[in-house]
Length: 263
Image (cartoon, rainbow, N blue to C red):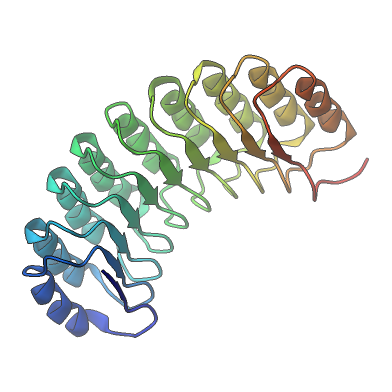
């Protein structure tokens, strides 16, 4: 059963009534609350409701007003919840502190498959917290971290995740200013990773040098099937490196390099 309340401006009061109902509901599996002006206080009530609910598998809280406090409540939920498989928190304001709370929840969670933290200003510190969680978590397969100001340091933390995590198959890092240094870090992780299948690095200014680092990794990686490098300032030199690696790599099936400059 699905309940779609997106773009309804239900606010905190409406969310309170909804939380009361959730505590006793035994059929709802999908709840879409995106863009409803829901703040941290109502997320606390929602967290309390989810402690009693045993059927909800997808919770969508995109485009709300969640901060670190709200993330703390949801992190507590993740530690105990046994049904939620998808949590979408895109375009909120959880920051690196909120990322830490969620990471703490992921350490103990064994049901969540997809986590979307796009556009949440978690920064490289938030990436560090998530890296620590991914060392322990064995169920998460898809992680969205687009537009989070990770930089090359954040990419370094996530490269450690690629070295140690054995379940993540899809990683979105679009628009994070990782640059060529960040690409080098990620390439190091890819060399030793045996599970990641999709990596999206659009809008990251990796350039020809960054492309070369990734190509070196692809000579050893045997699982990645999709790589998106659009809008990365890759010229003819980088394109040549990518062309060369495709002659030897037999697993990569989708490589997107359009919308890069022509030398």
